[in-house]
Length: 206
Image (cartoon, rainbow, N blue to C red; front, side):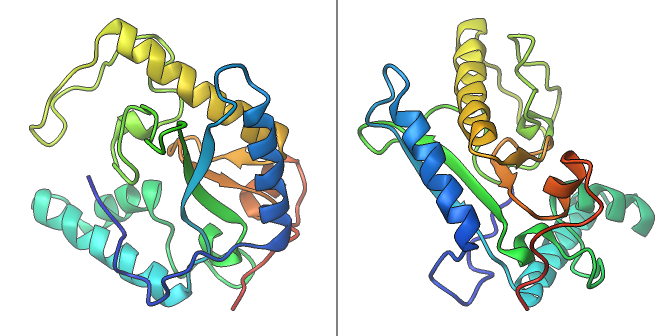
């Protein structure tokens, strides 16, 4: 599991106005679902500066290098960018969080407790893939020597929660990054690609 906490100098989460408006739509949609009337969205991360992105990228690179001493730089880079965008993608294709249009979030119940999603936030492995639990069972094997399993019933519960999050976010206009169940965006390059558009609405905030 990998955490980004502590890499930003700001104690506030910033997002584009259009993203905030759509998050309010998603929250309203959630409250209309039977049994979820008092549930809420919990936001973990939004805008990141390029410097913050660089720190996260480098930290994850070094972590993978330490845990996989036999990997060369090309293999490490390929693994890093699955979960952490390069800070050097160019002015026309900035890291998603640098646009202020990408948001990391989850659902919490009426008691403020995060609902089961199968992984913690920023747990970088196959279980983070949005559709990992679609078959109703947990098939991860020997990840970092920490192996545990969910029952079929637990997997179905996790699947339901992920589908619920996907549903309200999609209806509110967001697109999901399929390697991270918690990552959604509106009007950045990933969103534009999903809309079959060659241009995003939002670029870098820097």
